[in-house]
Length: 153
Picture 1 (tube, rainbow, N blue to C red):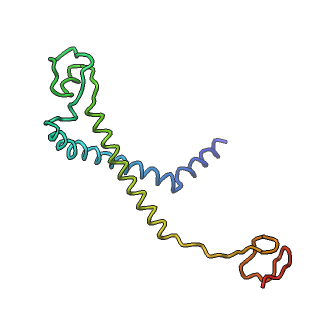
Picture 2: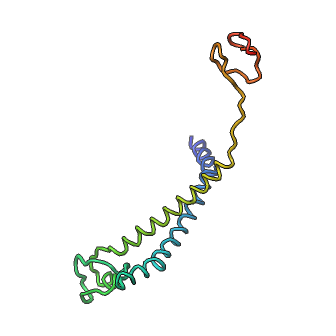
Picture 3: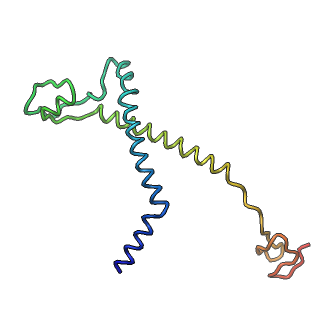
C-alpha cells in the first residue's frame, strides 16, 4: 500500500507537467522581482516627481504612535523602527502597479504563444464523409455504404 503510493507519487513528480510548473514558478518569482524593481526604481520616482516630489514608498498614515522615536515620522522605516502602526498606502500602490505590469507581460506572452500555436496547427485531412442515405460516417474513398449498402457514386 505505502510502496504503491510512493511509486505513484514518484511517477507524478517526474512527469513533464510538474517539472514545467516548477520551472514556471521559479521564473515567475524572478520576473516578479524585476517587475517590483521596475515599479519602485524606474516608474514611481518620475510619477512622484510629477506629483510634487512624493515618494510613494513613504506614503503612509499613522494609526497609532510608536513607543520610541519622535512623531511625525518622515519615512515608513522610521515609523516601523519606532513601533508605530501604519496604513501603508504607498506600498500598496507599488504592489498594484507591479501586479499590473506582471499581468500585462503574462498576457503578451500567452498571446504570442497562442498566435504561434494557431500558425503551426494545420487542418486535419478529411478522412470521412456522411452517407446521404443512412447518415453514418464512412471513409471518403468508399463507393458503397457498409451500413445500408447503398451505392455512393
